[in-house]
Image (tube, rainbow, N blue to C red; front, top):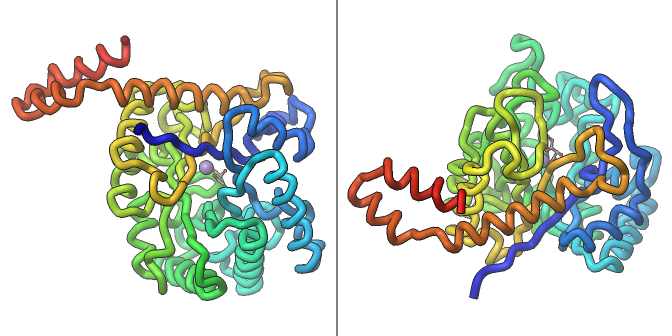
Length: 344
Ligand code: XUL
Ligand code: MN
């Protein structure tokens, strides 16, 4: 029987349209409204930042934080949605303007760790063992301001404390080479997987791969996905698209490069992503600024539709003919076989 995939989505994927050059273009939607749309849109699970779960989280004590986490879990489950992961949002607060774990100030580093440990408690309360770390501001704008070796040690120390905080937590790091920082620490899946082996429990440190982030690093997302899958280290996926080396565009999956999208689906299918552990496929995309509220989730619904259509293409691809062409090293014909198949 063919494998079926689980799809997840974050509340930030229904956004208000603000960009660095202009304000919101859509009214904000309540969490309840978002959750109600997710199941209807074909999604099975939700990804949350800690302050999506608990707004104004820094103003609340631990008992209140965990109470709100329990309430949101109930609300999501009431809509038929599981919780995929929770991630500390370490790039908003005044204490993280110079990064969190790698900040040059000890008080900022303590804040980042405290918030991450609290996010692990939130994850437990919400029934997930997956913590995602997108290391947004861990990096530099000025090369001389930080040392890569010292920063690496700060990151290892922080992750080791998280691993010690909970014997069951799995930490998936989402690499991105730049934005908001000029040069980020752990910019690629290769860096993340090498990093995992420096920690106290490498089997509990893996990665999330996002298509656009790979393209921004000049890498082919197909190979990055397969590289991580081959090592059982891919624990979540953010599929989207990106038109070359620009700002992080988070375009609908397949909208810039259908062939690379096909390649990603082929890799996912070949390695049975999520079959054993229930890992989810998310589409970390956002609405165009011109979209109206009523169409505010269409980018993700369309991305899922494209994924499922490409899955049919992956399953009907003539692999035995491809294998013959590969054996004959007739890559010219192989290239055209893929194009003809995609063109239908
Ligand atoms: C940033 C990004 C984040 C993470 C979750 O580029 O992709 O949305 O996926 O924090
Ligand atoms: Mn992402």
